[in-house]
Image 1: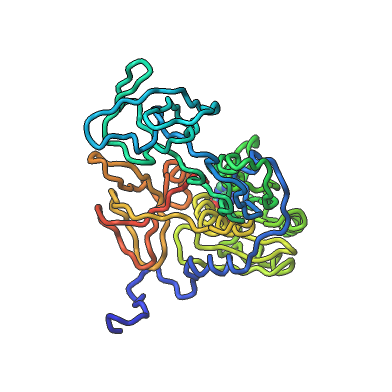
Image 2: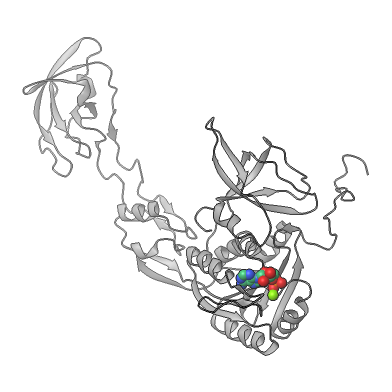
Length: 422
Ligand code: AMP
Ligand code: MG
């Protein structure tokens, strides 16, 4: 194979598995098979926080609606500002925020004005109070202020007819303020999606139960609860389901009956897959994938009755990684959000990151400033898929591409900050 061949030479890649699916292909398949749920409701603006807007919002007014001052100072006509030397102007009144000065200001005059005060007729400029010498009812000014300085023009934030928020926007605190600044009290949002989830495994115990030998507490339902809640889903927590044919089948049926999405963890790795697969083959159309990524290699995706189904791996870190990388964008698309990509940036690594080519890796990282004030990322320590404390300590994923081998200190790596979901 020559050097510029588009086909990668994977022969040297220890972890390369020709039957595995690249992560981006898996994500594309998932996203292209889903669409936004139908249904919207009208709610007061505050209740719309973190929900997805179901209408385009156009402004019916100008913000600001009148020319007003951006500073405390004196309003005057720019023609009264001297080119050189100083000039004295008489102060004829005050324009407060909310209490305008109801008389015109003539040449040779000015008005005291507060931030937010409307510019009186005859004025177009504000000189800040720090640049003025005040002598009783007269001020002395010099050059240095230009026409229109320290003034907010009509509609400079938002003009009549501007589209301020697009359908499909997830509403932030700034958006609520923006809506309020336009006098909009109610908006139409997409209905919440309902997500049923359960854990599978004979070894799992719920909180409150005692641990016998070989059993572990079910943590996946808690990480899933947290991430789904932060995404703004309605939840149906169905608990732990034993590895028993009838129980699994009943759980899948109940989940699909009552939710838009069904998420399970565990039971999709080789050895267990046949059993869950059998149930899913009977109830829906589900594909079992081996994704070329670490952690989180096994993943099931498809449809059970009318619900969309994600079968996540059992290991606690794998659950969070596959949720973040696949389920999150999919659910956001179902929720009607138009922008679902997750932000990524390049940051120098402060750790040596061991890796073999062949699989995309999501290592857990801590982004911080080093002693020189430079943004760097270091790994959290052991990177096993069962080490949930690595997710707790991390504030980002370090994404190492499929072909990458060990990364040395100082090399730039792709980093994906958690942004509140984890
Ligand atoms: P599995 O994919 O079912 O073979 O599970 C892989 C590993 O993840 C095993 O060590 C399980 O005990 C563990 N595991 C599976 N489900 C959970 C869960 N809900 N909470 C914590 N650990 C789990
Ligand atoms: Mg299991």
